[in-house]
Length: 498
Ligand SMILES: C[S@@+](CC[C@H](N)C(=O)[O-])C[C@H]1O[C@@H](n2cnc3c(N)ncnc32)[C@H](O)[C@@H]1O
Image 1 (tube, rainbow, N blue to C red):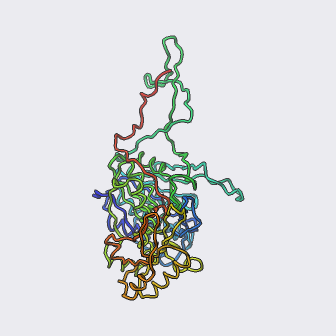
Image 2 (image 1 turned 90 degrees about the vertical axis):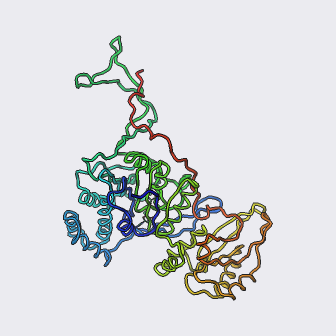
Image 3 (image 1 turned 180 degrees about the vertical axis):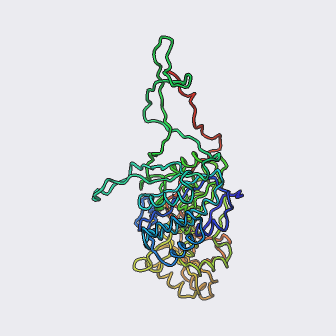
């Protein structure tokens, strides 16, 4: 059993198969890419706190029928449960070998694994939209069985800005498909209530001999009560995050924490274990931590895992205790990541110093892999640190290039991050670059610094004036963990007769 909260970097199918035990999870929430045929960018915040134009691709949601998809399809058809195999074959007959089929072939093995890891009393909420939601419902029926379906929840985000040029009704809902593993088990379901905008007057009724009758006072008049809350039904009116929402971090597709809190409060109790296999910037993880549940989050990018780590620290300080698996913790692990995926290596290395990655390598941003900003309040100016990450062989020209870039950009400091140890000429060239003097801290900082991955893993860090972590994305708000008794769900005694 997982005792500790865990954040995994990697492909969720591989992680679930390798690390997650059978029947160990109380609740799965998954918010996979919806097959929207677009890329999603992270918006970084400007130094003044507004959203910046600076963006970097966080993840792709484009699919194509290729060998990987064909292999995933074949694997399910040949080796999986009979009804799931038949469902995929029926999809293939109808859809052919196209991008939707590739998406469904990716989802099927993951849903099967998620069913395996759910406890017999567990629940699963699959977040989707109309693009693939109808196929996913059929797929869910085949994996979880139609009898275990509980609700199709409509998340109604009434405040979303609409594109009026589209000749259609504006779309204002997402769908959450709620299933339990076994409807005959004692699965957790806490009926939830929400406050009404205005109290309503209702006839007070009671059961007499099995029949509901109006309650009357001693003068024979019917009695009313004021009801100021309502049972939450399957239409959830929850605002989506707007650019100015304090909660918004700049990660694309970030969901409101209220949505996740509702799911968690309905389908788990304190101490239960929640799994989010597509955890993005970690909304489910944050909601679980806040509500005193245990959690497992998985994401396939270092951009997301690095952001979640910062978000957990910003929100809970040292109270959030968790383990990270899948990130390099040794030099050889870092080398392996660099060999496998230089982009992920770069994101991970920049995450170690809290820098924000830069995507464009040509034109204005040539030679820059990441940036960080700091303010000297004395002159009010925004100062810049520029990062260059090298995963291969290094030589003195890399230092010269970085010197050129910081001059061109009028940046104060440049940091070269290397896998290899710097050569003697590199160290000399860096020393010749001189110092940046901070009037506020009355201190000199080397203009060009070199840090190896080994040093960063030993927690050595850049020598610079304090930087605001808002550089990466916005700093998350502080959150208080709810330690006390679970919120009372249904309390009919609260209704006092008028
Ligand atoms: C729609 S976002 C989730 C957003 C999240 N609910 C939130 O509130 O931040 C989907 C996430 O799934 C991740 N992802 C896509 N494919 C994955 C895979 N095979 N394994 C793990 N994560 C994956 C993407 O990197 C992305 O962060």
